[in-house]
Length: 325
Image 1 (cartoon, one colour):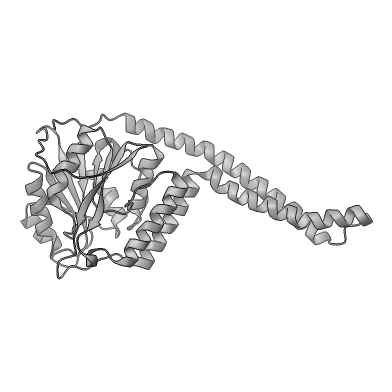
Image 2 (cartoon, helix red, strand yellow; image 1 turned 120 degrees about the vertical axis):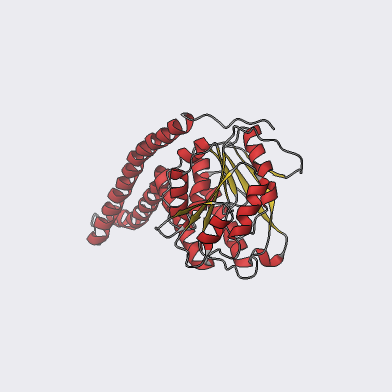
């Protein structure tokens, strides 16, 4: 999979009218910004359907989104991952633009992101954040993003510069082959791994990232959500790369067993006795455990390959979006 990163070139873009574009906006308590987000994307993408998925907001988010002209959907299960799962299941379109409802992303570049997706036959275009103000992107979030992105790259191969961006454009075949499991903010990690796993053609484009307007507060907790994202990467590592995951345990058990067995073997060769019998039993148990882990990895690797093939067939069953750029 090639990940292409390039700055946007501002140019006029014409999208074929028959191309169905849907803007999906997950939000929770974004009454201060949601009307502007809906209006900006409706202006940037004329004819696109704007869907606001309200996740148990306690303020006027739903009412203001509806007044701004959006189609409002209520999602009872809390968490961005649950919202994404619902949105991908319920919304029918050729191209999906997903953006957070906090008015930190530039709506004017959306036509260019869509145009690039269509023109180059891509399945996902990520709007990599380039903050215009230091306050827009807190140092803790920046460091966590880099760390988690590096971890994902080590586990799954080449990764993205901004794996956790909330501004993305998807093809229909990406959306309908995506089996969403995440519940919270770790859904961005899952979205990236899905593309890496199926080796989809994707791109990463630098986009402006602004500070939240006054009255809008971030729902992201640096430590809690960072830990959940890291655990998601490890779970995906076990689920998507089981042979490598269990091989780590196999090697650890075998090396520990051999390390404990060498002194026993040396004593036995010199005296013909095994004075530390419990240690000998531990060595055998560790070796058996190691080979059991290896067997689990081999079996689950076969299962995983079948599951990936099923996802790939679902992906191939839908055509790429067509447009005139």
